[in-house]
Amino acid sequence: MAILRQPFNTHLNLGNGVLVPEGVKVVRHLSDMKDMYQDQDAVQHLLKDGDPLIYVVYNVEVPEEAGELQHCTSIVYPGRVGNEFFMTKGHFHSRAGTAEIYLTLRGRGILLMQAQDGRTATLDMFPGSVSYILPYWAHRSINVGPEPLVFFAVYPGDAGHNYGVIEEKGFAKMVLAQDDAPVVVDNPRYACRRT
Ligand SMILES: [Fe+2]
Image 1 (cartoon, rainbow, N blue to C red):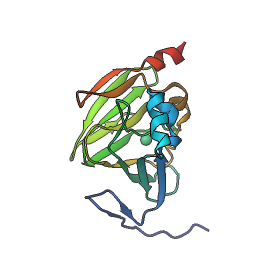
Image 2: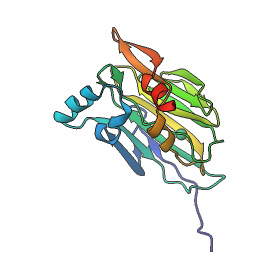
Image 3: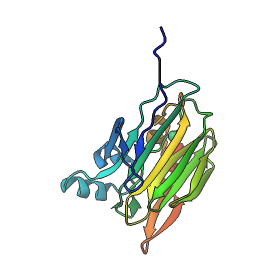
């Protein structure tokens, strides 16, 4: 018998992005994604002094089914690993032909995206920016400012997450601090891994 469901509210704190109830909370420290950063000496240096928190995701609990809408907030903390800004792991969707919308609430970021053929694109993230991530494009959020980057996301219920391709190959581009300003540069390790 189908469970009777009711429409529901979740409270989004527009200041810090926390959802109440918190739902399923995903917490990523540097050790969870240490191979994704370019400067491995900087990784080891940071890990010696602790294990910095890189980002947290609060997921509203929704069935992973077609017709539903997953939604969550992500908080990417400010910081760098060497010259590389703190960022999310990045992923394709398991059902790759599904889009996503990011509404940025706080902070300053760069949304790095990559198509399956290797083409890349970036969008600025700032309070009020509504970014449309195309179907079949991987996406990663990078905090390039001094305060937490907070954004609200909505995507199809059955989209799922495929982290494997990015874990293995990375993105073709990376975002580095140059004189404190973010610059998008080629990722030399991506070229190596492609061969
Ligand atoms: Fe996504």
